Amino acid sequence: MSNKKRNKKYSGIDAAMTRPKITRISAANRSAVGQWWFDRKSMLLPILKTVGVIIALAFIIYEIIRLLNGQSL
Picture 1 (tube, rainbow, N blue to C red):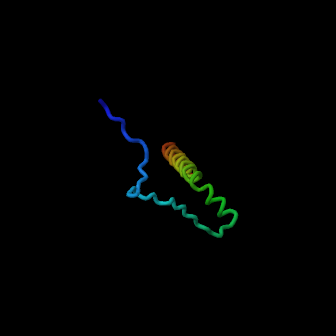
Picture 2 (cartoon, rainbow, N blue to C red):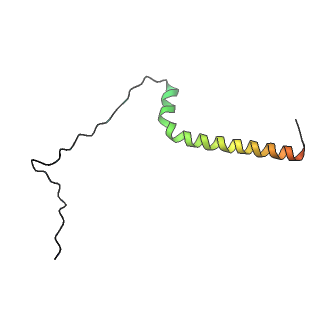
Picture 3 (cartoon, rainbow, N blue to C red):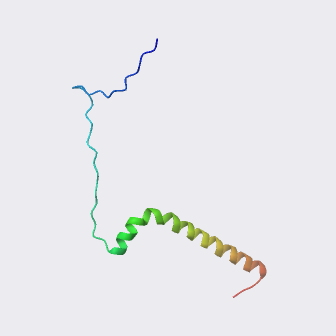
């Protein structure tokens, strides 16, 4: 015989008190460009890093090929 498990939250006198959820808000006086960057930073940073790595790799590959061919500026 199996007993049904209790799924109702205990709300007696000695029940654990639930703490209110705290939302922290920071106010800053930003310019229009600064606010735009602040709003989109988390989305744009990975994209910008990826583009930077791709450009760096392309430049390195270009220089290696140029050195192998013996060309100079």
